[in-house]
Length: 115
Length: 110
Image (tube, each protein chain N blue to C red):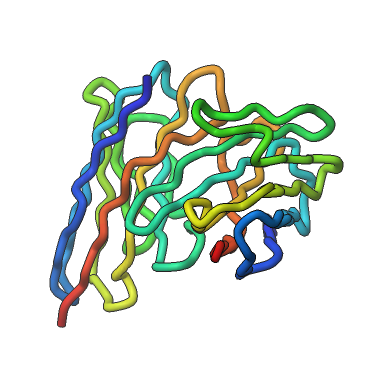
């Protein structure tokens, strides 16, 4: 149980275009989903927290107009990187939790390369 | 603020025991997680400690001292497949957010 999927696993896009990444909880209802970014040889940095049906809360330094997060249902959250630039190239990982548990279940990650 | 410290790299021999330490400073505390992450993959859950003491789970054990803001992950009977990064993450008060350390890259050598 507690499986989280992400799609796509890898994406290459041109500078200036937008990319959407999907995060799905497959066998549980995710009341909260988190989006992280991980640069090479660095740890996970939380970008934003989203609760189903409400606006995402962004961490300091993360542009909410550039990284659009939608959490329209209890099983799906999307992250859209708008007007992507090469410096946005990174490993994006989502996680999901349910209820009052602190444990987060991680998706397999999406490798974004902006050329 | 939140601060998590752990060593950057460690090397250990196959079959041996290794201890990875983590110190944390958080605004309140609701537990400490250890995750394993292989290169290019998402983290996988290893342990969660919220009370002081040692919790053992097979070859892996995790220890917590809340008064010292200290935890360690103990790996026994090391196998080559244990080569990975090990992430320490703490949960502060009033939040479900995890604050991750930078990870300890463990290399297991023959």
